[in-house]
Length: 527
Image 1: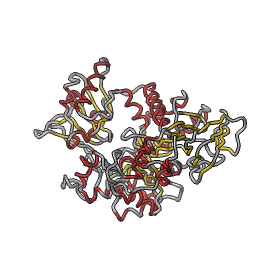
Image 2 (image 1 turned 45 degrees about the horizontal axis):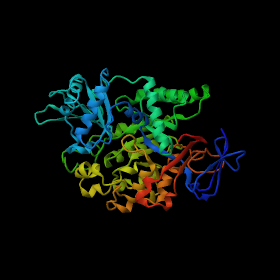
Image 3 (image 1 turned 180 degrees about the vertical axis):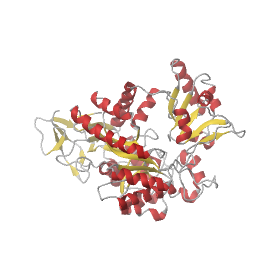
Image 4 (image 1 turned 135 degrees about the horizontal axis):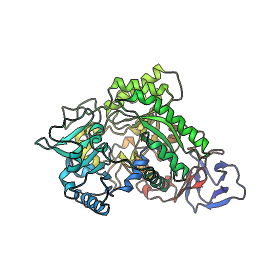
């Protein structure tokens, strides 16, 4: 690996500016010998971005199905499904992701719309929240879902007025009635999915990802992608804890953590993968009415949502995995879900020996006022997906009507939590939303949509420096890697991103247009 010398631009170290940056043997150095000179052409070099919450394998696999992401109407989605099905006549199932639930009132999609495109094979499409699926009639029939099928414990079958299933399924157990029937991907297909994800991450300046939903079968795909040189980012795997069988998972997750570590040592492979986290889903999503709330939904006064875990069981499981030395990473969106997550972490802190646990609450959408100071008090990292902090159609069409205006304006309290001393990290939840950090930074610092609508909850805007830190040093702290990454200091890994211009001097509403000119992972150029 050649030595590098970056010059002729602005170099932001994370705590100040420098004129040049030397890299030797993949690490930041005081000097570089016989270095290849990288002319920054007046651009901006900074620590590469991390993604504190994403689903890279799911995102990469979307490229292997109908390309429905970004389609603006039901007709466009159905046409793409028809095209894909015709081009792949031997596929037993048509599987794709991810459609926008806001294009249909209430996010309720009809099986008959897909029947018009594919009447003879099962079709299942994920909504981009990955908490909802849309099926055709054949898929419903294969799963045995009919008018008399009861809602499962964790899930809802959306129905027509006559009680027949509409074609939309919400949350775990309902979605799994169909998803469990889908044929497994081969190892080669999984590796190709990670390769596609690597390209997507590198192209936006990302070199570390918290995979926040890992099933055991995914572990071998990550290791095989590393062996084949197809994994272009560092990854920490977060194993999903099952509320119905978590106690039996403890030994398995510990064994897989050891297997990942030992395998990379034996193979003398680049140490790109760790498996140090357990992921919990405390609740669902507000737009689907399944996030756990302290008070009923405005549009459904009979419902406070759908907790995935009983709070006492969540606390017991979090404390157990914390005792096993796993970092806990909890999806919690509603104020009820976030309170349950904080209570669970508080139990782990109280019951277990002290250690550098760094628990994460991901999404942190609606926090009750008494719970805001508890983040810093318990050492909880608040992980935000900043792209969501805008009044886009998902908010205006689905979320705000469910919350009402008063609660809606309390969402994503980034600056409030930061001012209280909470550590922040940023992520994308890709493929739920765009993985582009610059777009997320634009929204975090403006709380405006890309067309420049007036700022929503402007008191929660972050400064540009704080937003950059959340995507760099904040994520490095979440990854237990601040001694190695997140700022540019001698001896640290040369994980770098080159931007076309200094974002601190750019129009805040144009940040997303800055060009990514290069990404380096430990001195190796990945984009």
